[in-house]
Length: 141
Image (cartoon, rainbow, N blue to C red; front, top):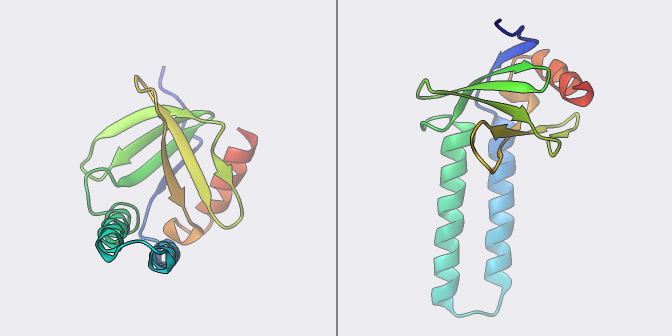
């Protein structure tokens, strides 16, 4: 018997998330700069911070790599995620998921995997009314 989809929505690039990622990585770089460690170690840490920023911008903001989430379908506690490469995985919403009016951290335990996967979803990363429906669904699911 096919399940009834309660909520299905597309993920789109989020400028708010991009600004937040940039700001947080700049704070991390400033903290590294303020420490009293050798310059070679600082340069290595700056390179790692830059790689981290690049990866998360490409994966979660620009949605360009295979692991980027393109579409999410929710059914009670079940979730189906379509990735950028067309692959689909299913799982359950984990209780660690966080809901606020500003963003949602959606944690999903995939079938056959031990560790959950998480993504941050901002209101400007979805269609206007869908974010509110997502928040309500996750609060009461």
